[in-house]
Length: 435
Image (cartoon, rainbow, N blue to C red):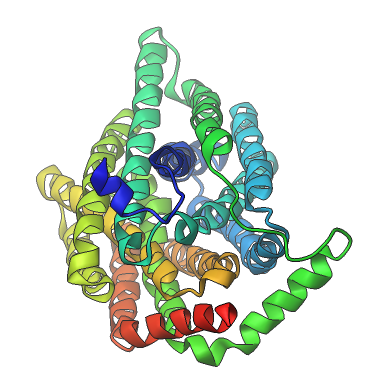
């Protein structure tokens, strides 16, 4: 317990950090089951009826939702800072994602328009909520412990994804054991996912405090938010290392988001996995993801944010080459577990470094910009994969190989970021505010 308390900002109770991390546990049910493990493959094989354009249609639907998050994320972050509204906005987006996920249970063969609409709505709410929960990080953790606390959240998040996957796998096995076709059993997993998201997020809303104070009264919401965001963009030169890192994120996250979005589809199309095999595969990689997030979170504050992230990006490059080369199941399973390790490590390290380089007064805005960079990557990466697979008439191995180039570009850009200088710029902002 003393180790936990030593990482927390003054006045923050350990129960609050647990409640904050529980949102990672909760929302991982959505991204793991809907985006990665089950619904993506269901969309391509059932909703799109296995058409050549199915993968591109899936990635395009996600791209629309990410584009909407990009357009609104910085504004919502600025609004949240001005009006101390992070928690209220987080509740609204959680409700939207839960209801949208539950509604996916009514999507069947050929229901393309309904599936696309619900994915856009639910994934928009998920992405916006992801930005908002991240903006609490600088409030609850000490600057020198942001890596550890971020790692706790990511680690618990992977356990949440594992828990939801396990529940879905039990349901699928029971349903198919009763003679129900897998195609008819998949919709039930959407209801399970929605229920777990809703229940697991309750501690966040019951225990986590909104420590920010409103900076403007009602009636000036969007005017003040736009003004605050404009000031942030105007001050960009003072935070040039943070902005360089945001560009770096857009590249390496393009590779990560591709893997998250297309993992089940790659296992299905390139390796011939069944739905149950894919769910088991991703359940195991969630374990390695949790381990990666926790372990790298512990070493990040010692090894350094930049060095830790550089190490994980090198691991990513090697892992992508392994997945491209794999012909048999043994090599593929090794590569898949390395994906889990890299996922937990790189995402936790990236979020922590954004918090480390962000001026505290504008954390909501900069995490909105972090979300913008991640969502931009979520468009570029998966759509590139979908386009390559479509143009190559279903060559998913070529598409995964092209994905590796995003990690190479991200690593090159990371080398231009001066973390010490960026941290000083963030602290100088706090000193200026104090005087």
